[in-house]
Image 1 (cartoon, rainbow, N blue to C red):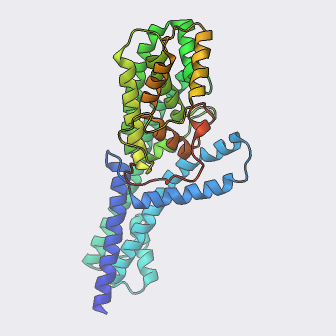
Image 2: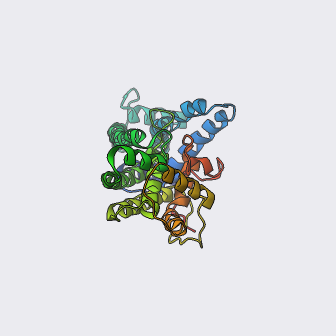
Image 3: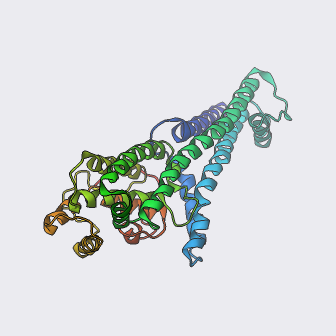
Length: 362
């Protein structure tokens, strides 16, 4: 009997420790870290939302539903953590002499929620009650502090996404962005955008890997998405460098590099596979040559100065696009964004990507 009590106490202690590790890895650790418990919560909630979405026909209905997914999953983490701590301490209370398992659960709940309606007896039970109460308060305080940080990062992200609609249309496209700059600002002003979006990519890499749930928070308007905006900017930078006849600047190349590194690091959290050092044509891209030629002809018709060697322009564009093609489409397949050319319009089928996983390349 003594061995049983010892085993139950150790099991309860390990459950509490595992829960606290989950909390630390999910909302305290300032880096992306795959975590099994949070992953299980998100996978379960996502499966329920996808099951409901099967009965919806229009994208607006699906978007309104999926807009609730990330907030519901984040808020569900707290009661899951609290319940696991409650069960772990209930086992420890029972192991140190509480009369029954039901009484142990009541004593654990009273301590965790600092209700105090169940008296504790002895120093060991008092120590357990005090430590459990402290953990309960810490969990609530951490979630309260977590949400403002998440929404501050969300606001920074969405400001740039909203501004892009003015410059690249809705849905945003690379060709629309280049045409508008040519007509309104002049192509030389694109350099400012590459600098701005390089900083944006750096910011979302930090925020969306340390706060992984943030990737699933949808834009306030159904027609906008951070991932399709990222794709439009990367394609615009690649097209400008490859096909537009303007003086070469390092800002466009740096923006593309910041972009694909950022998307790759975010994709790593979700197990999205990609080649770590792709080269075209060894690794093909999702853009067909005919699609590139159509964009080239449209830019020429709009009067945008273009490089005369179309074949070399295609090779240069594909050489840039291959760096972010797989991760861009993979994230679009996972996040279910609205339609956008060259990104969500060719994303992989829904449900074929894991929600959270360890680093995966190939």
